[in-house]
Figure 1 (cartoon, helix red, strand yellow):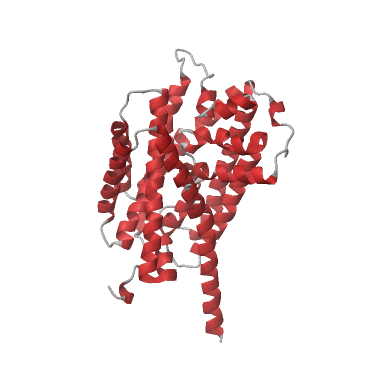
Figure 2 (cartoon, helix red, strand yellow):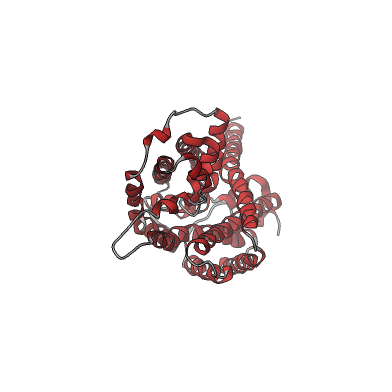
Length: 375
């Protein structure tokens, strides 16, 4: 393959594959909200204490700034995704290597999402359920959706947001038992601890970076920034509210010791003929994580057609079998915790830091080319 045959920078999908920009609101919120939310209040509280809700809100602000860099970078091209931008900036070989690394990161996110959900199911509902069985079900559901194309994935995200909207109102129950004095004194932690809290939020709020792959499939590209920012704003407000309620509901020591505080708050909900409402919450959480899994699998498998010139459907099945096979090697909870920590650190770099650096390189290149053209 010579230089002229390198990966195409711009994608021009068929009209039938495009979707309206307003659906990005649902997509961004759906891919940001997943298993990380269940344990978010505790993770951030360990760093920022009772100011954890401020760290969560500031993390959302940081994501909004990063989204601006991402979309402004994408607007420098006609209709490019991250794989195409790598090819344009770094050439055939280095660009393909960068895309391959990012593809591995996307696959790692896919793996961590369903493995963490399976752990929750095993702890709360089915202690003896083999990991490989539920993982097979989740992976096959994702494969089925991804084979349907990007519009099906957007549809799954829409249904996920609408179908689980009622769960936000369940927070009204623990609010009734909350003690607002747990929030005081405010701004009492050091700046270092506040930043550590923002960093701790990274795994829970990941997913927004997938805009780098769905951008070519949006019809009204001039509205992409608006609806992605609205989706991120909704996620930020929801995450901040959940953290606020958890801090006021739990005593200091109990929140630090509660692994999944959101599910623990659901335990106090009592409905007629239903004693264990958290069982319903865990079951419905599958609908919340499904868009995450589908979107990450789709973006990773897209790399097979962009990098290796193979059909995307082959990539879908290769990644599905690979991740399913990995489930047999995770035997203990500490192993999954280590893998999750690695992906969280990788996500901080790949989703929050790297796109900003890449955008600055694109801006510098465009400035250089304009200056050269005017000479």
